[in-house]
Length: 439
Figure 1 (cartoon, rainbow, N blue to C red):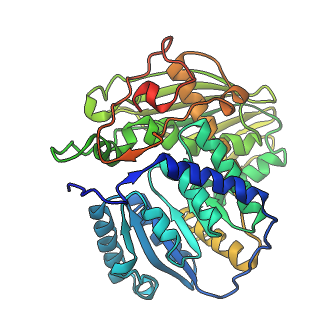
Figure 2 (tube, helix red, strand yellow):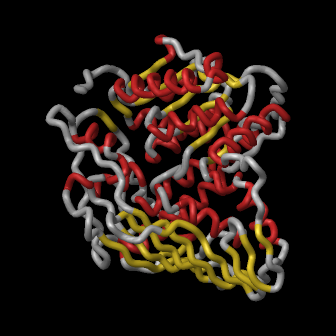
């Protein structure tokens, strides 16, 4: 597809300034009371129509009655069309979805401003599933417009984005808006049961942990002659730090979020290593394919973090916590002085659906959930590990949170955009903006 220039084909510095001003203005407003929607229909708009966004829409519609999908938005027309086809197929396979999908041609939006048009289309709840680079801006706009929000993880790619998400989440809390994140382990019955037991002292004080996401490679779309630099990078957003945060942020955040949850804190410092040994072709952008990070937490506990995306290697995804009186995988079992094994109900609730069920229930009850700060902190935890590996330096939480790093270009259009060099420990430094690295 060759995009044609239009008013929606660029994202300007003015857009970013407007969004930042909106957050600042909203912070100055008096809090609005939470609105209990009761049994009223909840009109949903999806922003970001890729596979995860389409899946999130289905999960939301499956989670409760009285939920209707009324608007879709994506940067690309073909992604919008593919999403509509997938949703139509889902409705033929599950008759309960037929009346829940009511998107007409007038409410399918494309371009860089599609997110704003979805938000302005009369929806009550927005699902944010575009590449993570855009999450802070989309969240700020949704909060300013008074919408409830489900947002996929991670929620930023740099400290500037994390700070924006925290600010927006505070506004949402003041104004009675729900913010739920796609860290579905927080809504998984097994994790919730075991983590609560850990918090109740089942394994004593947690002194160390290991968290893993090791797997093979993921998809890549070969560049087409008609694609500009920006289109190529956005269509392959996994492989560019300014768009995904690198895979330690985009994927491994799940396990790091569990570590923060169990330890009830974020790390204070990190050191680590990483590199790019398998995905060396420029088609895979400039991200690493493996990381190993040592995180130190406030109580002195150390968490070993490991993630890898390399084909033909051993897979391992999960967590392991060591306490003074036992151990646990945080998901199904506790070993030691107080052994316990979680027995899931039959059928066990799908956590991808449950997170939406919990979100909708909180909206209807007028007690909106707000997971904005916790997922922002988990995002920054992952960024911390990335920067420790990229720079080869010890990275502290306070220095990172206040760093001037802002990787997302202040202006975007379908045109040229240089690719950042691969990070080299000992040469790469933390303080950098998008234009000092080419992205």
